[in-house]
Image (cartoon, rainbow, N blue to C red; front, side, top):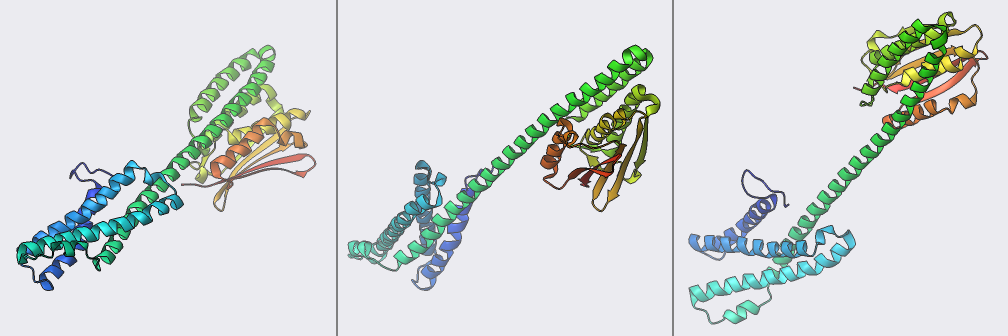
Length: 353
């Protein structure tokens, strides 16, 4: 109710005060004309006084409530304060209205019962009780609602910041993990194949540039991720040569679907490191990206034997945590062994617009 409006110069609070009490006082304006036989000028003066009295009382209450910081209280302590406040406002409303009526009677009829009319208790008290209760409850309900909304917004922002921090930390761990393995591959090439080592350094430079740039985003397209995977595969082929074969089965319709950066690359990296590298004759890594209902299903198959220790490595552990944080449990990841010499890693990511 305290939000300012620069265009009109009136805050929301004052708009509500003027419009609200102005509408309520129209009934009393009609009663003054019809029942009390006021002339139109007298009824207009009475109308302005009624609006002024109601605004004056409620504005005084608001000033006190703001000074005492009642809008920051919880429900129970607030109720303890507003109930007696409504009673006091109602009595003041009745007395001021009686004073106004007595002044009118003294002015028009030259009545000598001024004091008696001021002190009389009449149904105006019930009217004041009803209207003051509605105003006070509406005022505090509005502030309680805005306070809860603001608190919810702040908590949501803090949650997003915390989640983003966690994702950044996990990405920061994934990139050094990828870099460490790539440097080991280049190390093996330096003496055996200097030309291949230079090509590997170029590839690694491109990969790092891409991964560092894409780190700013929570997700990248399948096409961008597969370009990263193909560069990585070329880097590894320089070391494995004929021992490594990679096949791709990518649905073209999924090129622009978003996936977490370095997610597919990590599965391929593990397939080569824990599968092909341990086979004397090497092997084939099959990479498939297909649509299944509302999910992108990524499967990476490699030769070898799966052990539980491989599943608990830093890379896969961080991938699981990233998926949990980013997709709130809607994404899935599992590693299976359909046969003794075959390992299949499956990543299921919900398709989002």
